[in-house]
Length: 196
Image (cartoon, rainbow, N blue to C red; front, side, top):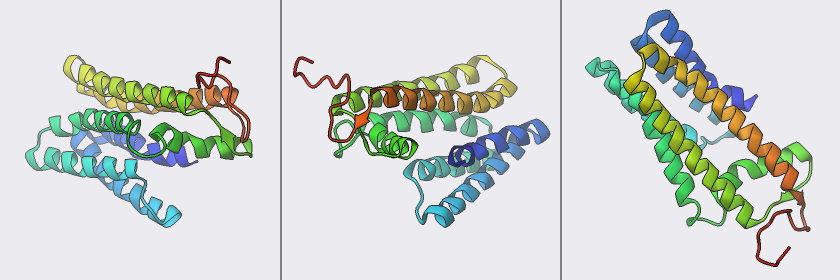
């Protein structure tokens, strides 16, 4: 349910684009992002950092698109967002006690399997690197589609992004679950250098 809520602004953007064009869709996206932030606050009493970043970029780039009547601003927003998120994942390998991948997926694994699951730090670092590459590639894909395909294809890419993200996260959860072990034991494939 939470994943569907997170992707609702992108779906709203695509539907509004099909019905009214890019400027209507940009307005709808801006309103949908504000609604998502309000929902976050009502439900969680906080706003997740990725939602904050996305909302700020949508409001800045969307506002510029509407004010200057130039679609390039909103069209570049996904690339800027994806590349900033990629950098955040990369930086998390050195900043803080846990990588962003562990912070995002650790709780999901614990909820899904009803017990605290433990994975090695090396496994989390490898997984974190996959997120770095994934978001960097999503940003590059946006640039390629923007440069070589139609505006309609670019708008449709927003739905493709949603599907790719869902597949990516689902594949990782399944991959992690297969390698995780209950707390207090060593995770398979830990790569901790003990010659296992």
